[in-house]
Amino acid sequence: MFFMHTGYSVIDGSLASDLWIFHVVAQSRTFEEASNTLAVTQSAVSQRIARLELRLGTKLFERKGRQARLTPNGQLLFNSTISGFDAIVPAVQALKSAGKSRAIRVSCVPSLALEWLTPRLGGFLKLYPDCNVEIFGDVAALDQKQMTGQNIDVSIRYGPKGQCIGPVLLSVDEICFPVGSPEVVRQLFSAKGEIETITLLHDIAPWDSAPGPEEEWAMWLKENPAPWPHDLKRRDLHFNLAQLAYRSAMAGTGLAMGRARLVKRHLRDGTLVRLPSAKPAQFAITVQTLGKALPPEVDIFLEWLRYELEEDHYDVPFED
Image (tube, rainbow, N blue to C red; front, side, top):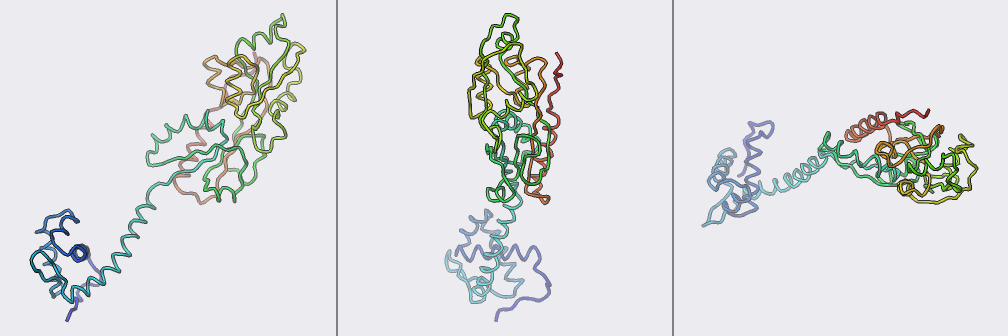
């Protein structure tokens, strides 16, 4: 009759280890195959089975040649280990997967994602090598239900202050002002009046629900009703990304509405210059999340994002 000694109130580590080796041998049917599976010597497997048999007070295997056949008591124990280990292994795998840092999913307006966020990601990943980030370019405003449905952890949007739907975790100022190539700006303010027509370059979808494709310029012109010294004809060109408008401005086509964080490096390298004595229009970059109980990796990303946004402000005065 098969019975277990009752001197153990719980299964200790060595018994659990011996039971796992027994389980593998019973599945393998030979000690040699089990040793290959366990990556230990055949002698080590034999010793562990002998120790388990001594501990339980019963034979578990009958050896016939290379085969290791279960005894009736061995079969009874194997039936128990099947249900036990079959439940334990998936649980351990699930715990290991849960312990790994999942990807942080970020939805960001395309121009900010391309020009500002993605160039900084390398720095974030060096600081936090166990974190992964997925960036999705999108202009549409997201409420909490939409963020949940799309598995979005962080939403970064640009537009007029106070226009976001739902709670805002962080809002930082963003200013906008016209930029153009040095030659176009020079000609525009030349006493000779070298330019008769001014071409305004537009991002037709600067934010979700913008009243029209020229809204950024309209808001700036409201603050600057007479921005250039001559009465000029106006022409409008439209693009679906702010970067395309900036590239066109660099090529001398006209003036683009420059968002400070996006044009900062172009102002530094001189490929774009801003209009002199122009009052900037006030906008905002807002960050939204799904709530307060956030995964630790999302909290880490948000702290890094807050620092980057607040440190990267426009620090050139507008008085010329």
